[in-house]
Image (cartoon, helix red, strand yellow):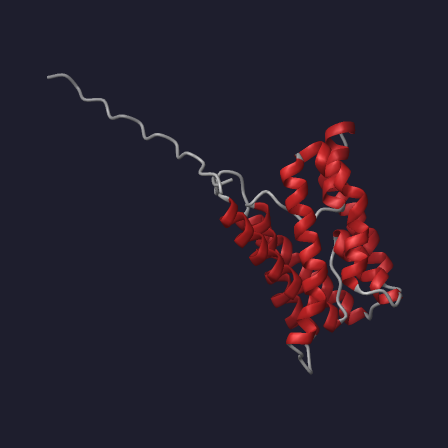
Length: 210
């Protein structure tokens, strides 16, 4: 008898997202991120990246987080267009705009009289982490420093992770001027929760839709 060779299973094929799925995902992702941002804002916390810079300027001035966050992202869209293409850039521009607007609307819809910083760090960090994952999986982001680090890595061989870590460290050091020590510790916890959510759920090979 001839031995029957089992046919190896075919690798799964990536299924592109359609326009409706992209729109729904961007709305969902920005809603979650902006709610986390609003909670951080009410509790006096901050985070890393471009949002962290926006928080620092917001706490040190009379400018709203949303307006500062939107303006800070403007210089990075050229890099996004050049490196990621126009679809990614357009989705990112829309996502940044939605977060900028919705982060100011949440406090008008939901007002919490008492917020515990470490609880907000856990909840807000988780919300933002999940929101980022939703955006990443639909080829969108919240732009800013992350795009710059990827560009420097590609063009000049600089490690994006190290650059991002250095920038976030500078933001943490600068935050001593505008937040309390308790808010500082809670913010660090929030950053850990946010990045853990992304690292555990956004790995290559675990998600194939594009």
